[in-house]
Length: 327
Image: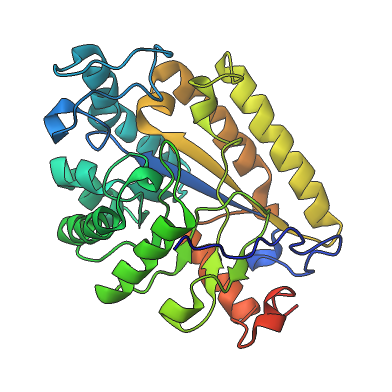
């Protein structure tokens, strides 16, 4: 039977919580680097066709039964070059990001994730494959969850801190739930879950109460403050579009924070997209702008945000308390 959790169309409403981020910051920004290269749909992974999404020449037609060298090498740029260019941009400014790591990609290049983890970046999960988990049997979802946990643990010595399935198509409530169940079975206590785009603040959900015995902290992700819009219509036609959009998002949320209602925002990056030189220059401009704002902006990993949130707004013990986040 399909799982139909209730939808929350209210959220915090007009009166969002009043608080301050660490250091008195008015805005928290979570940069996310999606490490997917090697985990995409590919003949080399046993799939019947090759990937067509989020590349330099969309739209394209899938090639069935034989390898697509163009597509494979566009993806390979991300793991060979792009990820390191992005990492250097953050290292230069002593900033940390969260990695959404695809398990199969980690298996094919474990030293990358090991290096990023050693540099202080957070390693979260982007499931085992970059695929449509909403269309897969729950047994496959469970097996892939276990494989992803193992890949990340083998690479950096610990399991993923949080989970984002995402991918083309996105999860269903059933597949999302299966991930939580599999994580519990594997002894992995997720600090956060991010398959949500519905708020500018973290919040608690009771959707998985019967699995984990209480609420789960959701840290919403973004598909608008995201370099994927370079590859999908309507999107960014040049790097300046990305810079302007991110800066405008920061300015609006920062002003709300200055008025006593701080917010958070995510910025999504892909190694094969933002890692290209022309777009990397745009990332540099965004990071310099963030740096220029000083202590008003807190650049944090998702686990750091989760740690602050659960300490400031402890997990509610009753459903009725969830909506107000213990303000």
